[in-house]
Image 1: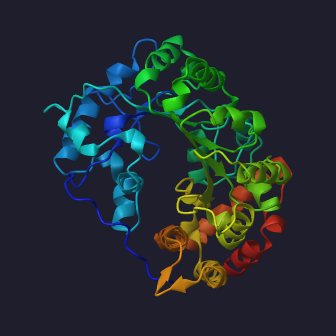
Image 2: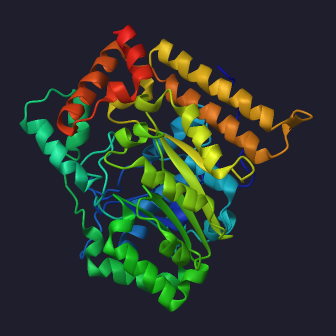
Length: 451
């Protein structure tokens, strides 16, 4: 396997545990629970109860609540809070975490970090409100992806009911995953329809720099459409950056025309496989439709637009990284600025789907295919004096290799895990009429040999 390379050096003059987000961004879960970002659990009050945005708790009250102030104080002192464990784990593995990536990118909308620190009171209070809103707009969705659950996709509810009422055997980790959040505080998947939320967002537009929409499928919600239209009508679109996590199936030319009027737009398009493999993982999405959307985006000439392909790494597509990357290069071209335009995220839950379960034979096959592709890419992206002509091209390949190391490095009980993987997919196939073994024959053969 290729040797891991260290990410960019940490910039001087900042606390070693600084992260932009507690100073600039307000985020929520699908149920309206505030959180720092998608990698952290939701915030809690002094009694340990999860906070929830509602008619009785406003965004402004959370923003300078006790936990947010404590997080800022802790980061200033040089410590990453416990809720930031995922970034800590990635950094200890030599990866560029979300925290570090944002520091190195220095997004214009986030402001100067030293100014943010100077504006912070000794108790962690911040006079300015959030300039970015990372909003998970409920669980309304048109897909029921294999690795998803009802909490994130309303489309999943029917399959969830059948799995638990038709006596189908599923692994404990899958049952816990599908049933989350269990008996705890459930949240409200339509929290964003509370009028106080919309009014706060509208009143904050003069100082808002970014909206980051995810879901569910954010483009299916009324608040999203209404907020975009209001930004266009008031002219605030000119100073606002947009970012989306989307399956992309609602993107059309009308949306491109609207987005062009914003300062920038960054589309994260979910693609976890090519052809039938996409349709299996992103069920019941259609590859032809997704491919058409991707090619529409590849021809988009808006100067402020970025399109990133978001790949969710899991055992199902462990052998398909080369296919996905080849498709990406075919659609978007090797001459594009690819530095951050393909992103590899890792399935952590349920355990029975994670790439950590890959047996040595699967890992070796995956690495062999990926290294073959990397070698072929380097032929077309020649190095001069040991460096790629395009530093973005070099970053793409090195980042990919680091992330594949991370995807395979954790150790689990492989044989038992593979049995649970097969058990879960067989149960899904039974209620969906799909067949994972015929869709992923190479993977199925390696797993069968292991078992």
